Structure formats: structure tokens, C-alpha cells
Length: 225
Length: 225
Image (cartoon, rainbow over all chains, first blue to last red; front, side):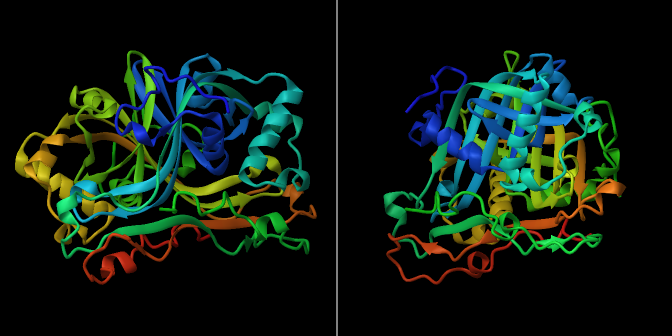
């Protein structure tokens, strides 16, 4: 199991027992998440932007309009920090102080590059599409030359990364366990509702199985005690 | 309805019809979210950190260990950018290009200050606790002096902010509507599962109504077409 190096930038100082640096854990969180939050610096000012993404090997892939602030920053080679966070539950302790959440998160650091090569760019758009909705690429109309020209794809090589994970029941102070206060975990997860067909569907097409059966991850991670 | 000024920092250049600057919309998204992503700059390097939060009037409140990187940066008066994102569904178009997500997000900018005053600090911890789990503050053991000393609270005055919202079905190119490809929206929302009592509960306390009946927002926003 490969490890990302623990450097000053990504080392977790607070509650270090929650931190993990192995790529298997980190990739599994990246692969389950749907949106990331990418942070960058422009003229000394921090910006954080929510974005869809994909992962290809040790690269986080983003796409967007060529003129977007984030894309321009990344293609210029600027440093990026990206977080993906999965919320698994509220941790309800007897004391205010020990309230928490069960979660799995990754914070990574790296620099990006503009993906110029047409074949690589098309493949990375496929990876992003399949990350969001596996099975969709084969069915949808592929990008035209005009659409390819309007879209920029950037690949951020993950230089360093940390996963943080909290699971299980609250941890209260010993003397608080006798308090007449309910404590426990309220599990949260992403729920998929019934698909809503586009009112403008002009052809009789059944809902694809990858839509009707959509789910991400096991849905059970982080709930175990 | 008050508006945040649209400046170079917060003006949405891409798809400006999705952008809103009124405080009512912005506050409603902040009030529904559970975690934020806070970005800051340290020695030229961007950092993004997921965090619980609360809102008090025009301030975003964060708390953490005094030694944490984020808290130290904010109490030193550094610029912060914070995002809160709510994902409402996958937008499944006929063409790869028009795939999207329905979402409500806020990106805000400001500077923070360390909250020193004991009464204000305790009140802000109450606001954060009640933001996450309304009703909990009255039941839980309040912070001891030692716990208060170990916790830092920072308040970020929101100087500028933008909400972005996408709702409704996919928007495909006219010529694609005849394609034999299913299109529509797959709604997503945060699901609350049954509470799991702490195995170490030593007293017979019923599950509080604010836990068993927990839900955030209306759960219907962003789904309408």
C-alpha cells in the first residue's frame, strides 16, 4: 500500500489518530465523493470553488469553461489545495464539548496542467463523466469539436494528501456518562430519489439501469462503531 | 432585501444567470448547510479545510482547537474564502456537454477575528451547536472553564458573497432532443437514518424529538423545474 509523504503541509497536528496517509484510503474517498472544493491564491487572495471532478491514477481532474478563474489559475501552474468531504453522521455527546461529526475527508495539494492532447482530453472527460454517473458515457452524445474547444480540462498531480476519518459513538468524559442526557449517533447519507424524466423527452426511452440503480460507495462506511 | 456588492472578487463571470447576491438567498443556503470549506493562504500556499460552522447575523462562526492552522490564520486577521455547497441532483442531458448538477452554493469572502469576550464566545458556541442540531444546547452539559480555554471561536464578517443556484431539467441543444437517449434529473438529498444510541448509555433517556425528527431545510429546494 503506497503512502503519501507526511510533510509540514499535510501533516495533521490536531487529533492525529484520525489521519491516514495511504493512497488506498485517499483514493476511495475521492472516488466516492461527487463534488470537491478547490482552493487557490490569486493576487494574495484565497478563493474556494465547488466543482465536479474525476480521478485518473494519481491525478485529480477538473473541467470548466476556458475563461473560468479556476481553470486559468491551474493552467498557469499555480498551487491548488482540494478537499473532498463525506458526512456520515452527527455525533451527539453528553457534553457540548464532545459533539462532533462522523466523516471521511481528503485534503490534497498539487499543481495542475492544461490537458492539450485531444485524445487525453477526451479520455479525461470520459473519466469525469463516468465518475459522476458510471455508464453514461456510452449512451450520451459525445462532445463536438466546438464543445471540445469551449471546454478546458486540467489535471492536478497529487503531490501530498491526507485522509481524516471519524467513526463510531461519542467519546464523553468519564464523569459525564451518568448524566441523564441522551447520546448517540444520527447517521446521515446521500439519498437518491426517483429519477424525474425531462418533460421534453420526445422519444420513448426507458430509464437506464445506471440511473434507476444509482448509488455511491457502500453507504455504510463511517457508521460502524 | 439587502444585497452584497458585486465586485471583481465575487462577480460570477461564467453563467451569470445562476448568480444571486441578495443576503436572504445567501443566508438561507448558509443556514441549511452542515459543513463549510474554508480556504486561506499561508506562505503563499492555499489550504482548504472542511469545518462545522454557524451563522450569527452577517458573521460566519468557526471553532476549533487553539493550535489549529485555520484558527491561527484567522485570528491573525488573514483573508478567508468560505464555500457552502448543497447538492440537489444530477442533471442528465442527451449530450455529454450539457450534463450538470442541480445545486445551491455560496462562496463568501472576509476576515475573521478571535472572539475573546467570554459571554460572546459562549453565545457563539451555542449558535454553532444549535446550527448543527437545533435544541441540543439546552440538554447538553455546557462547556467547563477548561473546555472554554481549549476552544477558540473566530467570527468572519462576510464582506462579499455570491450564491449560485441551478434547478430544473437539462438544457440540451435543439437538434439533440430527437436522440433516442434518456434525459432527466436524478434528485439527491441528505437522508437522516434512525438514531443509534450510544452503547454506553447508562441511564434510560428517550431519544429527544430534535434527534428523531431531525431534518435540514425543506428538502425540496432546487428540485422544481
